[in-house]
Figure (tube, rainbow, N blue to C red):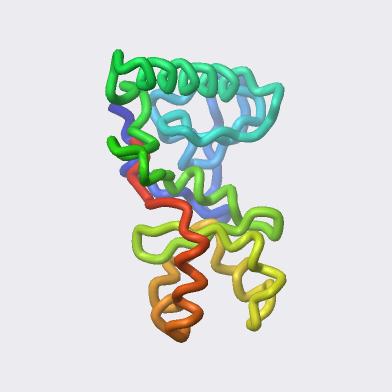
Length: 174
């Protein structure tokens, strides 16, 4: 069992650790994982579905292939969940789950995800229409903070709009 779920992502001021495999400096939250295997500039969490987005990353390509195989096995009812990562969907397949590792990648105008409690909202398509401006969403996107108070601050009508953008729930990194 990986211990990444107990390690919070480090902020840039927290420093780095020199990786022994290829003498590469890595963020502490990545290099602290005992199952981490050095891979050029990959910063994806090795313990969940998070991928770095680099099409040339061998580690993430391998992980993506394993996840595809697991989905095929689940569809053919051979297994209920994938043993290497936590389940990305609930058993009834109606709820999608994301880890904080995945959430943190959605912190820009092209993809702005907000966390309120344990619910994740994709504000990407709404960001330009927000009365408070684009910046008010961007500074809290990617799980930068819990927006539960912001959700409750908004009018009932605005809260209905939030619900339209719900994409899933937060789960622990396994």
